[in-house]
Length: 126
Image (cartoon, rainbow, N blue to C red; front, side, top):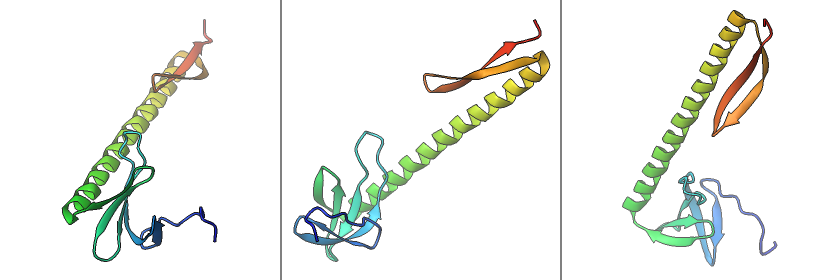
């Protein structure tokens, strides 16, 4: 087995971090601050937080629970933002279709301005 072989970081799997052999207890989402997600690991008696490229730290039970709750909140916020964006795009498309029907406009294309999607139409009735 190679020194740098890939490990499975699925919940319940054994991983080696340094000289420790630990079990993955939880996999947490990235926090949105540009850092990768974290893993909560255990050796059966101690909990550890592992962040790729940041190392391994011993954590208390309370810290582990707080990390999981924070990850859950971040995931819910990310999903809410994605749903709001999807709703805006769907609403925009519905209004554009209605305008096209009313004015006889021809769809030209979509444009992305500061993360917002806009449809462009050309009035062919003129």
